[in-house]
Image (cartoon, rainbow, N blue to C red):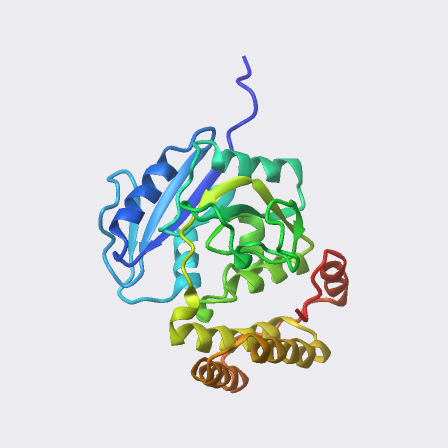
Length: 292
């Protein structure tokens, strides 16, 4: 007798530097409590031996901190599942059906490459602008097709992830989600924002460190040089410069940003694979041309 459709298989990747023991324990507890899926979990110690990990969960120890995107690539290579769930270690899942609901989106839409839930602060339930993967972010409850992602909490179709080569590991931190999303779109896929599925994450400010300004600027240059048709690169970078000049109130932060910008121009962006003009049109029609 048939028992119905097979359960979705999900490989979950969590990174740790052993600096958030309480948050990691909560994240793992809510992850392992998920129902309606077959779950495989790995915790990657980015420059450490992972601590306070449940005994049934596998770990990978990296001798040095290789950065978030490369750590996630290594984690993805060590889990099984038709879908990959990348999960910040200070986030947590408020319900036991969170992952099964995200996986259901893929089964409804074969061309979907990634699904972005709504991220909210657990205390005041706000959703930061950077967590809403579209330009018009004033209403975080509006669902729809999106062309970028908030990479800290996202589910990706495994076959699509592997086809585009995963995260840009050399980015270390920042803009790796846009890079991955653009490459997924260039392979004919799309992304969806599903705000009815909520995941909690503390609303911290990444701009409190100089590293934010340097890597944010450097990787913005790398993002454009890796992915855009040559004619669009100056438009993309000019847009970033104007927005940075408009928003930055600290001379020190602006100086570090310009240093990162120059670092990006000097090279290091990796292999170049400009997206097709058909992809540029698709991204524009979806609400975010790749110059913004």
